[in-house]
Length: 467
Image 1 (cartoon, rainbow, N blue to C red):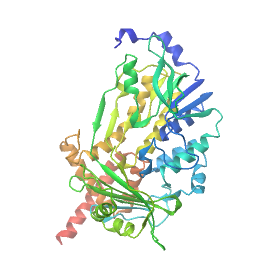
Image 2: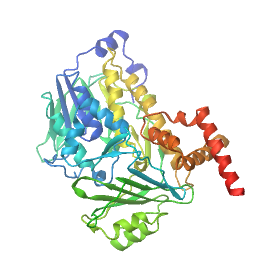
Image 3: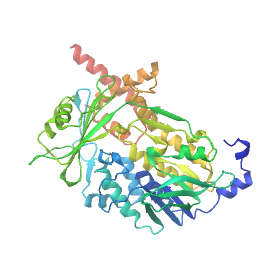
């Protein structure tokens, strides 16, 4: 390992590096985080190269390099609005490709704490899309094709960082062909690692004599099973997405059902604490029948399966603390490569979109210091990490869970009451959806007027029960 003295850069050298022109940039990984990072970089760079392990499909099909792509993915409203900012009119393209708009106040049905949500009747502006992840990625790739400075290198993987002799600046990446064509060096003034959970950056940093980042892992041992269906003839439903929620600490099971393109339903059942759903047809249906509402099972039991049952168990929350270590200039890490969240909360794609906006803000600064970017990103990720791990920690089987203190227990009790009341209180229901879609801060739940509303409704409910 290099000592701190050996890796210190003079102020003059740092300034010279920081104000360098980003002529050539490389993005490692062609999933959501990488695609959006490339779109942002296209505003600042003459050349943006996306390095992808897969042969990218010409149609919206699943990729072997993204095994979780067959699982359901949620595009939260904040994420969709960022897409529209980066790709104006992309909603029309999604619709033309078969994606369905969803009004989350009217068309998202939530079953929690023994009752269904009280949905709005009038249309709202809390709208995004429900579709498969392959369709969303394909649509974004089509928009990126409009940028002449963006190109893809497919069926290659990055195997090492190229650096200056002092290891203080990254100057590119070394690539290995996955079709037997050997290796090549790809120079760059900035390299962005958006390779997701499988990121090799910790090892690459160690290889050049730097300290890899410490990690925090909170593993709820959640397992999914997903299958696509054609609904029965004459099938009608007011919902476009249905969630039968898990309820810690006892109820470990959940069911997610969504309408997607092609007139299909994507159906997922899952269980915490290694309560994994079976992968055979009868076992899958039996697991669905065991959910706290029978509605999910009643729909899929008469539907026609059109896919195998796919399992997914890589669901641990993992946070790599790049903000705590010394990073070489000309290299940043974003997306799931930094903060990978348990997918049950549907935050992943939107957090990746927010990461791209953090990158955009950083690029607007004349001093492109890597540590500043990683600290800004860590700050952006902190709330989403806290929400996901806080919920997962309520299951006693979660590894790395935070033991709840008195304040945590008080807040958990309050949040439970708030959710119960939001099922009948339309204003609180709207607030709940706005917070869930990153349109408002969770601190809005603790506004004095909201607290008063929850306490008043709780007292009224107790009075009704006692009478």
